[in-house]
Length: 105
Image (cartoon, rainbow, N blue to C red):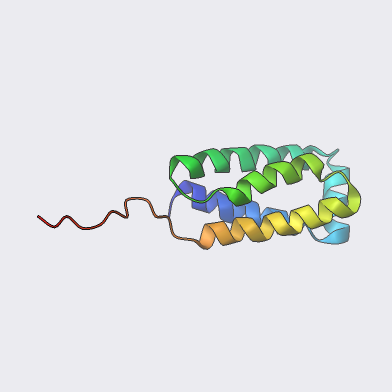
């Protein structure tokens, strides 16, 4: 398992934790919104590694947008939920890297 897939699992679980209405909102507010900055950096690193490994990165790109807009109460909850689901889906998907057709010679 690549590092980017491990980071996708971690970011997906953290995003789903932030999607819990009272608990996630409390974490974001009591951290002084630095939880959103941490998630932004985590998604950025995951997206860069995913592109480099030729793996799907749409969950991480969506997570970057979610980190920028999650300070809006109801929209933040929805974005965290969608991002968590997308990150876990991309973590489950197999990479098509080195999936070349067999050499006939």
